[in-house]
Length: 553
Image (cartoon, rainbow, N blue to C red; front, side):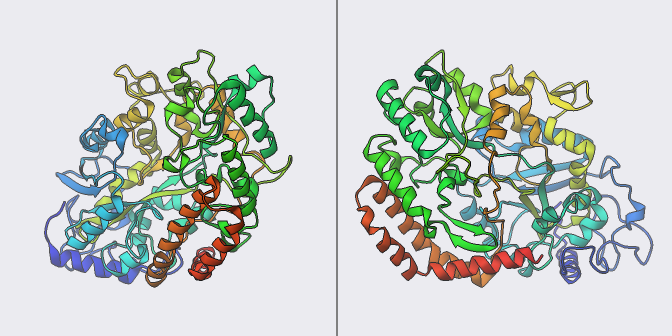
């Protein structure tokens, strides 16, 4: 695309910004789409000339392929990962994107930032003013500095509400399918900042506490439920099974997504306690949680070098598949892979319930997936956002959703007897040796924004232990205290980052010191006093205001 028609781009941007606003509903007059003075539509893939409107909705039939009849290219800034770089130089080599081009006539050129440096790379790119047609963002991970409303106010991100309503009917219907999805799709100021990943059916927790079932069987032990149960079992793992790191925890002391601390009703970050924001370490259970970990560390029940290990969804294989560890957090789809890597032929890893302080305790924190995922934000450098909306809307159609999630029939999936698509051997037993994660990126659209994600595709070939994990990690949990994805204003963001940068560093340092005994537990009160002095109350106020704006959307 990138035809340098600056005057047209500025006209389009101004008209879009004038049209956007409100509460995320249908809105007022559509500025760009509509009948033109001449009544003649521009050629497909072409920007309307000054004074000429884009084609009216009635002149275009959604779902018509190809989308364009002349060469059309969009550039997209899109993060990558190790599963991509292991098999491709760029996502342009993906069979999915090649099939999308064949069907729609639109070519996508990707710009990939360095892995784990996305926020820095994005900020530098924005500073140049020479950014691509589309920017992928994952709020609150890496995002536009100051938030999406700030990006729209700066004239860099286009508000796509009116264009999406007219030219992306599948997407428009998807974001209005229920109140929670609608609330998350629009910003505090009622803007639609682009095209989101939509999760039609919310995936149950896909990560949680995992243990060696073969060890429990060998020792004649039932599945532990409470922390007291686990203290006994971990001791047996240490004494009888030779585990030198019975429990694996990351360097923060908190397993991701409240997977271990939920029973103490505490967390590493902010939580939403029935509409009131609090900071996890200020919860009464924080002291008890840290005290327990300190005792377990002292007794050799926790990896003695945990403070050096930065991991998220799973600890290193050298612990979980070799007999060094007996309890850790893991992803449900890797249970078969764990067994394949294990030294012990009897190895079996399974999901276990999130530990409780007492049997029957109802939990309120845990991994709860949202209906909205990553964002593809359309930029003001995109000279034809109407055509882009028509193109991307194909991925929100039934046909596009199947292609995105399952690939091409007969190549990567077949329809089962019930008429549902299901991956075939090429995805879960790849003849070229690709892992499932690598096959997803080679043949389909992986979860990274701009489509409807059907997580159930991952269940193809799933073992019973894999299926059971989804229920086990959900049981007895309301997930009601999880913070939604709130957004901060530009001024709030600046102040919040300034406060929390020091507090986060101090918290992580002191949690390690308390667990390892470098600082006595009697100093926890002093730790809390210091955090108050550093401004945690103001940070909570900022989060509370953001939560209230979110709930009012």
